[in-house]
Image (cartoon, each protein chain N blue to C red):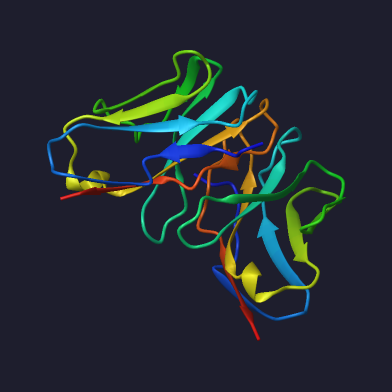
Amino acid sequence: DAKTTQPPSMDCAEGRAANLPCNHSTISGNEYVYWYRQIHSQGPQYIIHGLKNNETNEMASLIITEDRKSSTLILPHATLRDTAVYYCIVMEGKLIFGQGTTLQVKP
Amino acid sequence: DTGVSQNPRHKITKRGQNVTFRCDPISEHNRLYWYRQTLGQGPEFLTYFQNEAQLEKSRLLSDRFSAERPKGSFSTLEIQRTEQGDSAMYLCASSLGPHGPLHFGNGTRLTVT
């Protein structure tokens, strides 16, 4: 079973920041948090991952709480093409996907 | 980097037939994973390889399913005596090492009639 909990859906206005939360209260000390997204009819796309420090790349930022029990994925300026299902996953040798959050970016 | 390639993109077969899918990972990626995804659900883990060794198989992988990665490069997933419940998207992914991010292909969509 997935070790993460995410809201089933969220809306965001185009051009605004999208903040997607994830709870992973049972995470172990050496387990990484990964974020993927999936657009209809495509394979999941890697976004970002981290262990305990905050991370940023060209796609997004990942904020991990100090106790590592939750994290937030931030898309700084959401566009309509960011509409997708976003998965937060704690890696245990392989990715176990939950239901994810369906993000709808609206004009 | 040409990405993970999966063939065929679509496969329609009759119940009881055998099917085989192929996955070509990103070169030099030593780990290769197979997942299955049905409509409205997240991908479900099936199995993974490190080089040519199959390290883990899910309970979902019945005896009718077999995966191989004979030379540690491409992999095949075979389903024998297909059933309608096997209809799904079959996804392949590869990574470099246990913590490297997985890179997914666009899948093979199987329809069993």
